[in-house]
Structure formats: C-alpha cells, structure tokens
Length: 292
Image (spheres, rainbow, N blue to C red):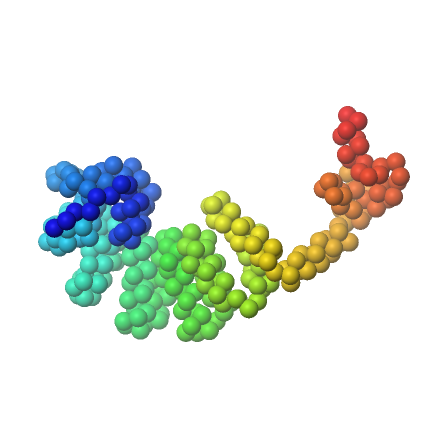
C-alpha cells in the first residue's frame, strides 16, 4: 500500500477534510510524523494523540480494528473528538444507530458541537423528527458549531419557509466562522442586493464579540456590494444626506446644545452658526489645531 507523503499538516487536513481545533495546533509535528512515517508512541496516555492515531488508522491505513482500539482508549480518557469519531464510524460506515447515538451523546456531554450537529442531521434526514433535530442543532450552536446554524437556516428556508428565522441562523453561522451562511444569504437575495447589504450592515453594527477576521471578511463583501450596485450607492447617498440634515448635537466650538451640525470633508463637525462665520471657513477646528 503506497503511503502518501505530506509537506505540512494543512495538506493532511485538506485531503481528509479534517478541521483543526485550537487544541491540535501544538500537535502539528506529531501529526505530520504520524501520517508520513507511522511514528508514534503506542503507550501514550495523551488523549488527543490517541485520537489522531485513530484518525490515522481510519483514513490513511483503513485499519478499522486499530482505529477502534485507539479511539476507545481516548474515549475512556474522556476525549470528546474520539467519542465523536466513534459515533461517526458507527453512523456512516456501520450504520448501527444505537451505538452511534451512544457515542454522539457522550461527545456532546464532553462539549463536542459537531457531534450534536450530526445527531441533529440524523434526526432531520433519517428519522424525520424535526423537534429532535432542532434540539440537537440548537445544542450544537450553543457549543459553537457554525455548521449546525447553517443547517438550521437551510431547514427554515426550505421546509418551513420562515425567512426571518432562516436569516437569523445564516447570520449565526457567519458569526461562528462558517462562511456557507453568507453564501446562502447571497444566493437567497441574489435579486435584491440592497436587502442583503442592509442585513449585513445591521448585523455588523449590532453583533458582539466576533472574531476580527470575520468582521474584515464582511467588510470586504460590503465594499464589493457598494462598488458594483447602483441602488446601494443611491441608498448610501440618502443615508449620508439624512444624517447631515438631522445631525443635532452639542457644537464643540460655541458649546451650544442640540444644534444642527455640519460635517466638513475633513470629518470635523460644527454647528450651522459657526459654519456661517466667515472667520471659521473652511473649518474652525482645523484652524485652531493648525494655530496651536
């Protein structure tokens, strides 16, 4: 049997569709040695290493007895990913759903969101029990699983046709770093780019504690929408005009309260009376700053 040689761990993950967790980062060298050279300590008590050895035997060697051996050792050490992988094996390969459920439930107990997602998917597609499906998808979302949020969005889109809830869960998928949620929103609103733009703007302005990379990703999408769509340009012009003519606040020059402020191109704001003072043209604040 020819063993594939990998240059880095990303190639391994790409080939076998693995998703690295934060806990896996420090195991990069071990994983590369394992998949390239079959080098590992069979007596290790490190549950994460044991789980990766199980993955190696399952996907690289296809030795399912050895796979189960190492998964079970890791499982007894309360390794959530190993419990999930055993559940997946009995779900997809063996189709023993009673044993599948046992391992998925243990994985959920150990905080594995993808196990809850898979159990939700099982109840959606095979059992067709939508109440249990929702229960497990929601549990998966609680555990930070973006795939489950996207799956729940799909359910509300295609089954219940509740587009408000569809939108809610697609956005939740984006929040949890699962970009398929955005692709689905783009597809649904393909004929109404302005609607999509408003949804993303509102989400960006109200969402909390989101990874900066996600915000930057959304900003890039918003920039493309703004650049390519005339209706969005017109909408933004209206918003800017409305903001300017309703910009009532304290003037930082004369200190008058609740007065209409004018926004200069430089970004500074002063009230209409100060703006009309020729001595402060073009911008009183810039003049004061320059003089100081």
